[in-house]
Image (cartoon, rainbow, N blue to C red; front, side, top):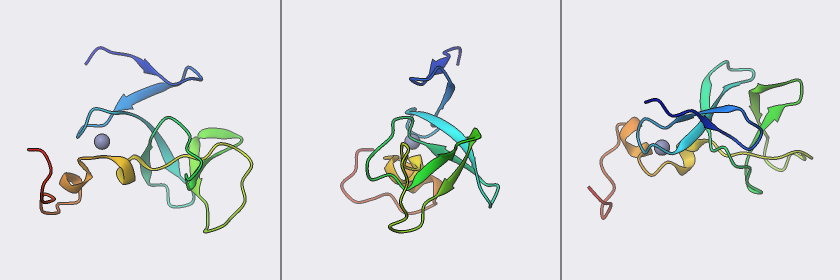
Length: 95
Ligand SMILES: [Zn+2]
């Protein structure tokens, strides 16, 4: 794919291999796992970027306060995430 997607700050985005939505890959701290985030912040997000390095992110604890933008993992919003998890196809979803 030759498209070069950018987020609102000009950072490169990738596309979800399942649903083709734009996602921003970050490395979770401290686990080191790669995690795709939805590029637009959400008020109910539970993932925040590290101030010193926005390719790193951490999950907020429940009710933990945070003053910056919050993001959600794309795996929680991806309509195709059931594929990745190896779950049976949800009843009633499109083919
Ligand atoms: Zn997706």
